[in-house]
Image (cartoon, rainbow, N blue to C red; front, side, top):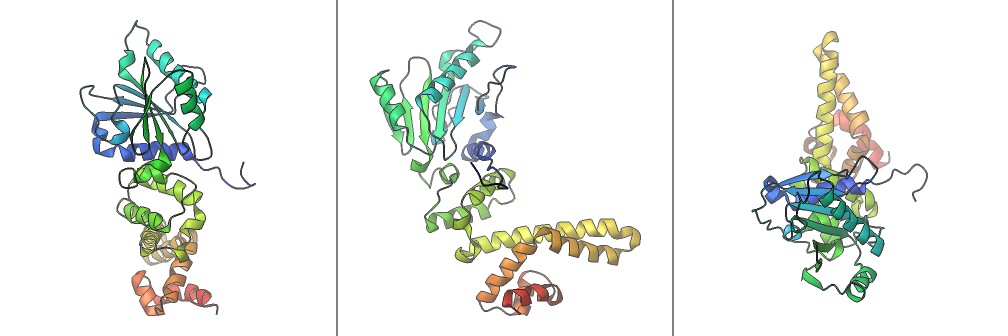
Length: 308
């Protein structure tokens, strides 16, 4: 449940983006389908990953078991993988194998199942070992293989994954606590902030961990990221203003663009940046120079941040 007025975090789209990030080095060999429909009825997989060349061996740790058709079930941070979830997705795999219109067109050995979630599924593992006599093997940190007669199956526990190897899936949680790890994530994002997939994942991570991303308590990486986005929005506003103002004159259009870029785009972010720079002892002139603005444009925000 969320408080009234609070938007629901879109975990699944962010997970779909994070999965592609994790496998981006070998993305040319894979085809990703989000919420693949199993039939005309409302029954769908979270993600279907089709390996375009069945002879290609995926090297990324979360994709080593991949065959041709790879079904992925994702559990958001507050959800748990239970016994019925296991059978539901197992049923999806069986249905997908059978729903081809041609007998045995998809071989069972060409299908894998991956369960991904933040919590270690202790009860499910106990059930599988005691009732189905499965052997569960920890292939590596946070990745567990389940022996099965039909399909290759793995369970990925996000919070157990290696930060070095699986930074983005590990960080896709609402429970980021370690300041150093948050800063490592920010530095990694800074290099990829123009990429749509990284922006999608980072937006959900930040929204889910707002206290951890307080600007006044964070590293210089966040300053630089905010400045990058502020300048982008400001320039976008300026260009729009120029285009709209051409009929009345280029100078008036620039003025309109500047106002729109500041007021509509990043007013709040600009105030935060100015506030931080003041705290570092920087003058109005220095702040204006670093933000590539005039002192006149910054002055009202500067005065407000100074409490004048």
